[in-house]
Structures are given as C-alpha cells and as structure tokens.
Length: 581
Image 1 (tube, one colour):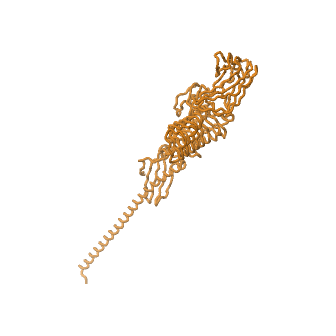
Image 2 (cartoon, rainbow, N blue to C red):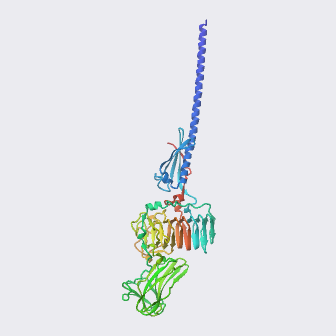
Image 3 (cartoon, one colour):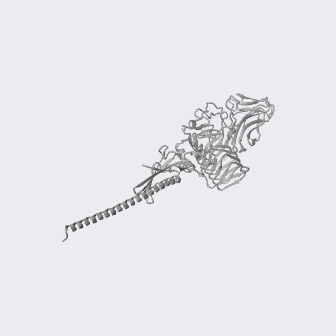
C-alpha cells in the first residue's frame, strides 16, 4: 500500500507535468499568434505597397485621358473621373480640381490637380500631381504661316521673321523669292529660298475644324450680310460739283482754270467749267482712291461732257504702283457742239502689278482753245456689282454700324454664299466669316486687331482672298474717323489712349493677330500680317508681296477652340506628393 510520501511525490510530478504542458501550450499558442500577426503585417504591407501602385496607375490613367481627349475639361469636369476602377488586384478612384477658380471646365490654360486614391484590402494610398499647360511641339501656332496643304508662292516675295510650314509641299515659282526659314513634310521646290529649308518630321497640329468656331458663334453678335452696302461704291470723290471744284485740278498751261457753273447743267445745281485753255494738253484730272482700286477688276465710267465747239474727247485712267504703271486709254469719242454727250465706258479688266501708290482720272479735249464742261462724273467697280461691301467702317466693342455693339468685339458675318468685300475699314475685335462666296476678300487699306490680346482677329470657314494695300488707312482721304472716342488706336485690349473727334489721322494698314481659315486662302497685292496665319487648307501667294511678323502669344495663351492644337498638359516636376487625410 503506497505511503503518503509516495502519493505526495506523484502529485507533485503531475502538477509539474501539467505546468510544463501549459507552458508548452502557451508557447505554441504564442508562436501561432506571432505567426498570424506577422502574416497580417506582411499582408498589410503588401496591400499598402499595391495601393500605392494603384494610386500611381490612377494618375497615369488621368494623364492619358487628358492627352487623348481635346475636350477633356468639358467631358470629365470637376470631381471624380473614375471611381473604384479595378487595376490588378486593387482599384483606384481619380478626381480632378482646378486650383485657380475651382472649375476644371473654365480656363483652357488653367492648371489642374489630379488626386488618385489607390485601394487594396483595407489599405489606402493617396497620391496627387499638378498638371500645367506647356507648348505642344508641332502646333500650327508655332509658325508665322502654317498650312495643312501646299503653300505656293507665284511671282511674289514672301518675307517672315519666323518659319513658314506646310504639312505637304512648299513651291516657289515664276521668279518668287522666299525670305524665311521653310519646313515641309513632303517637299520644297522652286527658287529662290534665301534662308534654311528642311523636311519636317511630322505634320503640324490644327484645331478641330468641327468645333473651333463654336465659342465665337456662341458669344458673337450677328451682322446680316443684307445690312451691308450692295454693289460697287462710287470712286469719284466729287463728281457733281455742287458749289465746289474740290478734288479736281488742271494740267498743261498755267492759264487754265476751273470753276463751278450754275448755268450750264447736266443735272443738279452746278457743273465744272474748264476755261482758259490754249493747248490740247490743257486737261482736267482728279485723284482716285488708291486703296479702293483692285487689279483685275472691271469698271463702269459715266462722264457727261459739253463743248461749245465740236471735238473729240477721251476719259482715261492711270495707275502708278511700286512696280511701274498701267493706263487705260479708250478710243476718243466724238462730241457735237453745244450739247451734252455722255461718255459711257465699261472697261475690260484693268490689271497691274504691285501696290497702288496713286491713280488719276483724266478728261481731255481735242479742241485746243475751247472751254468744256463736266457734270455727274461717276466711276464704279463693276466687279463688285453683286457684292456686299463693308467700306469705310469702324467695327469694335464700342461701335457697330450695323446694330448693337458686342462688348468683346466678336462679330459673326454669315455671308450665305454671297461675295462680301471688307475694304478701307478698321476692325477691333474678332470677325468671323461663315459661308463666304468665292469672291469674298479683305481688300485695300485695313486695320485689324483683336479686342482681347489672345483672341483671333479674323476667322473664316471658307476660301477668301487677302488683298491688302500697304498704304496707310487715311482718315482724310476716306472722310472717316477711325479712332473715335472709345476706340483708341492702337486698341491694346482697351488700354490705348490715342483717340479724338477729328478725321486727319493715318493708321498702318495690316492685320494684327491670328488669322485662321478652315479652307484654302489666297493672298494678293501687298499684305501684312503681324501674328499668325493658320490655314487648314492650301495657301497661294500671288504677285507682289506677303510680309509676316510672328507673335508667340497665341502659342503661349491659345484662344478658345485652339488649345488642343496649341498646348499639352504636363506634370509639374516636384509636384508629385502623397496626400494624408
């Protein structure tokens, strides 16, 4: 029989065994717990790392969306762009905000902050980057002249202080000279090129033709084509001689004199009497507005004459240009004595080369000592007979001769297929020509500039002709005040100060700003463009000269509708950062 001592020993051993077993169990359970904690820690670390990758992927997707959609501001807008978009075994949510005005949709040149939240399991990682605009290589706004099709220079001089570029070919022919760096994707041919030529690696980028006009038609004021003057405008400044001989002079002998005569009339109150003649060279003449004469046009002349002696008489037109002269001298007309005879002439096309410096209309008589009389003298451009004419006008944010002014100077002229001629006028703003007829042109002495410095000056969705004169836009010659109160010259976005109520100033002729054409463009005469000439079509420079002075302001701050062709959003170095919320 076991003793008490043996029983006590066995109990102690049992307790010791149970204690050791408990310790082993605790140690085992602890090891399992530690293992589980380690596994969870490793898993959480892996999830966090993967969430970070998902966040970066979200930013890359956002940048790709911006690069691939020219209208991303409108299509994506503010706030969330993508929510819980799967990537790998995680996901991301991407949002956008404009730090300038809190509206992503407003401001083509505003920065945008993209924030991506990467998620994997319970792990979250927020990453952001600031995107700002930067020049896009190959924009059509990089060159002074950029065409999506061929550029052809024919018997003309093209001068530019910046590269001209074509997405196809550049050709100089007929004695043409190109004083500019030239780039073309396909070929450059002809002569003479005085500066560097190169084959471009890629075509230039133009704005979306389907939508580039939308911001302007939405904000512009419509000018009905029917409100413009129809037909050619009178070119004789004083053809009726009502109480004045202003504008008329004599040639030949010093004894020849002019005076108004209220007795010998064809119509009206007075006629012009030419007296004191002693030679067939004693004639009478008047100047014609050089900036209203267009080479290749036809003209209708009507000149009632009266001679006390039977004579032969002739009316001729002489044009002096910077390249020479041209004279239209039709056959003489027999004028019976003591009766009014109307000399009527429909001229053929009168052509000349170069920019018109002066022009005169002369009336001569074969009766050397006989007085003669003129009345109701008229000369009209019949090539413009069916055109609608904006001539001698000021269009600006403060003035609109055809209706209410537009505060931003944006005017929409829907030509509806008619020929519209804009000549000898000042335009301060953005003039948009829609559906122009084939004879639509900007002609003579004009002064264009945008009302806002980064807005276009001229836009058209059809083919037009630029046929400018380099002669100044003269207020005294045209009888128009081109810088009235509220329309200073230069305008300088409204900051200009030179304005008055007189008509004695001269303004430099040319277009300052961006000219955009959705179709082919022809350039004639002696045209000056200071800014950018962007033509989504072909350009033909015919005779005389085209001078281009480049401005990069449109590349840096593109107008509405031009951002997709002008800028790219780029991440700002150093702006990548983790966000903590």
